[in-house]
Image 1 (cartoon, one colour):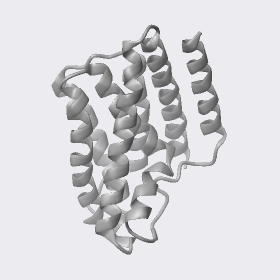
Image 2 (image 1 turned 60 degrees about the vertical axis):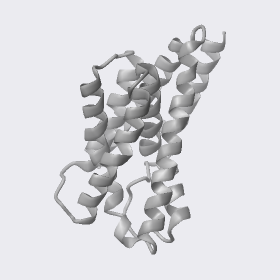
Image 3 (image 1 turned 90 degrees about the vertical axis):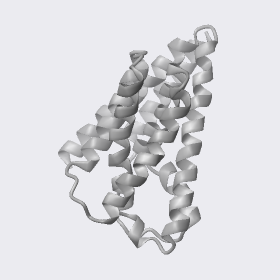
Amino acid sequence: MRARQALAGAALLLAGWLTAGPALAHSGTGLPGGFLSGFLHPLSGFDHLLAMVSVGLWGAFLGRPLIVALPVIFPTVMALGGAMGMANVPLPRVEIGIAISVLVMGGVIAAAYRAPIWLACGIVGVFAIFHGYAHGRELPSAADPIGYSVGFVLATGMLHVAGIGIGVLNDRPGGVVVTRGLGAAVALCGVYFLFRALTA
């Protein structure tokens, strides 16, 4: 019964996301402020939010050492992507890469895919470059780039921890069904984001 309620809740969230306006996590520059703006920015776009929570959730599903490694690898590589964005290093199809990250992360959770360590780290690392790059393009316009970066990384880490917290459901009866259902909902959101990116 709880699994059905959780899936129904996920379906409602999905419906809300699909009927909402476009994701705003990477929509232009001119970001004001420092720490607070950086902290709130990852929470303002569902594409980034879903990818970050999914990294934590997949790590929880895969267990040690990936429950720790994935949430460490993502922000570390994201910083590299951010530096690339700030330096205007060409990286084509960034929004498509971000949309695919949501689709794939949701898909591996839905499929309960137990990737080998090297592959899981590689998947998360590649997607981190796209997320970091998009936000790195916005960093130079912040009034306090260092404060903005600290806030952004902190919020990203909290989203990873939230995903790990959701992963605790895997240890409860019917919990894997719930988390896989959430993964499917995230993957569907990824399909939507990809459609938007391809038709923009």
